[in-house]
Length: 115
Image (cartoon, rainbow, N blue to C red; front, side, top):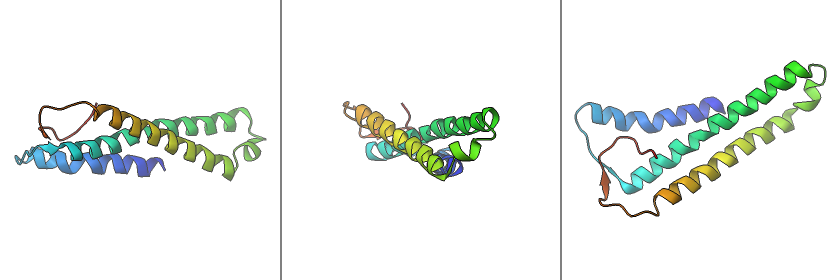
């Protein structure tokens, strides 16, 4: 899950950045910026997934004999589900908050739309 999230994050930024570096710097529309910002913000899943991995290591070190009981398949699926759902809620909240504001132009001269 962590590698999929990181791959998605990279695939969103690199094409537009390479296009701008080759000299074809074209502005990005507000809708494109909102989409890009949503997927970039969705990468906050990485933080929550790393937290879940830290919990896994903690249980493995502190309770090695009970590890298979505490960290079973159901617990792993639940941790991944919670990380993804929290990331989705944060991404949706952040993007809707930013794009409720008014903008002077309909195009932005950047390759990455970030807060």
